[in-house]
Image 1 (spheres, rainbow, N blue to C red):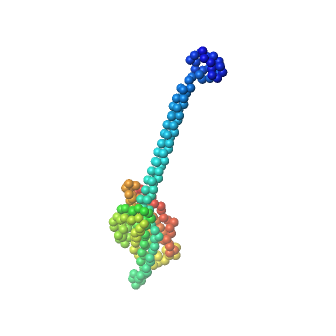
Image 2: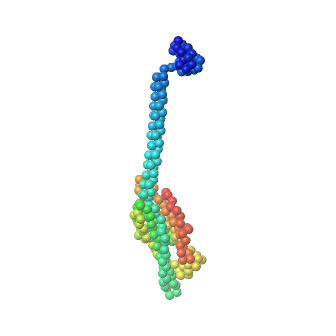
Image 3: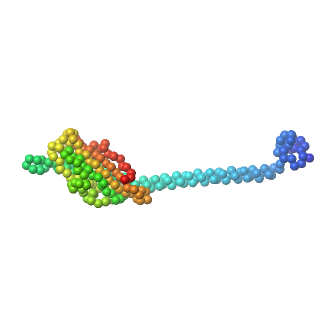
Amino acid sequence: MASCNSCGYYVPDGAKKCAACGEDLRPRVKYFWKSISLISTIFTLIVAVAVIIQSCDLHQQTEILKKQFEIDHMPNIKIGATSLIATYYQASAEDRSVALRFIIPIENNSKATAYDMKILKKELALVRETYNSAETPSLKSTLTARDFDIPAGQTKYDSIFIDESTSNFEKVQSGEAVFSLEYKIQYNTLREIRKEPFIYSYKILYTKGQFQYNQVFEKTLGR
């Protein structure tokens, strides 16, 4: 027989718990190793959680760097401030016409080159008729003849030369009529970023002696 260390009640040898007070009578050394095992398990779990968190942070940082790389190597193409030069001339003894020259700046406002650029569509609607680069030689230019690149921070200028009657041009100047110019450009970036080309669509109106920029379309992706 042995006595309980807590209440003094006599308990049989080998008893694990006191029948009187419920005191645990097992040797303390077993509890020590059990506590050590529990602490080890908790520490392992903490380390595992820390590794998972660090891995998530590393993945997030990798994605941020990837996005930054794409931003740094993504061309930003847009049509700049289009201008129009009108020159009156005497086409015949009875007819006076206006020679129109539209100057269209294609800007690359980024840190990356735009590759293999091509003008898919160039259409100019005057008062008397609508013209496009596929059918009208005067709308063609060196930029419509072949693919071209625009390096970072640079601008290429395209031009359109066309004639209009004096009376029609005066209607446009007074606001009675409008000219409209529509552009569609395709270009590529680094193939590591995107395999499909970008498409930039643009439409602008001219009336009352100025261009109306509220008709500009945003850049769209894909074909």
